[in-house]
Every structure is written in structure tokens, then in C-alpha cells.
Image (tube, rainbow, N blue to C red):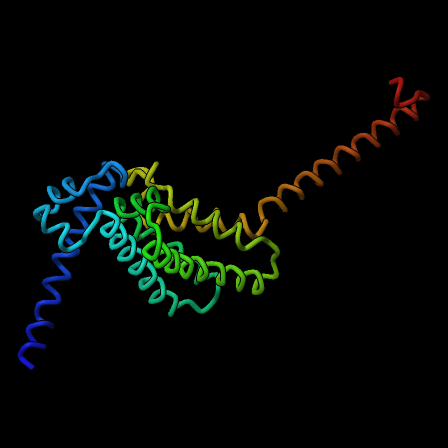
Length: 238
């Protein structure tokens, strides 16, 4: 019983230490890239001896795997908590966007590493991470399928999901907090762009305006023809 108590007491300390190591490893991968980083670089950044790094992690691939697993699992867990309060598919999609952007802006280096080193993991480690990512993707796709039914819309859910991820995942290349604001503000802007895109409101309004202008042009042409004919000429010659 005492042994169990000691194990439980040690777990939080171990988790904090591991979290710190992963944080420093993320900084190295972000700066040097996965291919450019060495175990010696990781050892220097984390403060752990090179022998200790090999003993506890074995390779830099294992560290990248732990970074990706921790990041994707945390994002997934936070999303599920948020979706409990979503009564409609639209609310769920908004929660999805906000949750993703909030985590992204709070952990920009980790998200940059995930975006750049998407295919660096192989074998069982890569398959495990791919499974978590598929689950995350599938949640978003199911929300969009529900949204289509609720709104009576027609669009390709796969294209919409991947376009949304493309819009969210690459903001680290241009995000400026002074110009682009908080996660709340950014999420609101992206939601507006995304929903208008998949609902087709903007194209419909554009078509309506084109029809309106075309109608006015036809009407004006007809009036000109009437005037010409009334004057005894032909539209072609006049």
C-alpha cells in the first residue's frame, strides 16, 4: 500500500518533468526541423544527459511521437468537452474552430512542428498518431454532414473539412497578434468566411446582382430599339 502511494505521488512529478522535456524538444524541432535536430541538440536543450536521453527515449523519433501524441490527444480531449455544450451542428463547428485556434495560438511551436513533420513518423508510431488524427478529422466531417442536413445544403464535406484545416493550420506563417487579435476574434472571422463559403450565400448574391444588372441592360437596350424604330431607323444601323 505504501509503495502504491509513493507511485501515485511520483506520477505528477514525472508528468511535469516529461512535459518540460517535450516542451524543450518542441523548441529544438521548431528551430532546426526534425531532420536537422540531433539527440545531442535535444540533450542540450532539455538539460538531460545524452546517455539519459537514449535510456529514457531511445531516439528522436520517440520524442516526436510523444510530442504529437500529447498535442493531438489534448486537442481531441478539449474538443470533446466543448462539444457537450453544442446543441446544433453549427454550434459544434464554431466550437471546433475556436478550440483549434485557441490551442494553436497558445502552442504555436508545437503546431508548427506538427504541420511540418506530419509524415516524419513511420511504422506503429506513425499509425497510432494517424489514428488519433483520423478521429479528429472524422468529428469535423460528421459535424459538417449534420450541418448539411440541418440547412438543406449541398457541398462536398471532405473538401470543406480539408479546406478548413488548411485555413487554420497555416496561420503561424502570417499571424500577428497586434493586427489579427485574439483567438476569439480570429475564430469569428474564420467562421464567417467558412460558413459563407459552404452555404453559397455570396455566389448567390453575386448571381442575383448579375441578373439584376443584366435585366436592366436588356430593358435599356429594348428602350433604345423602340426609340430607333420610332425614328424610322434600325438598331443595327443606328
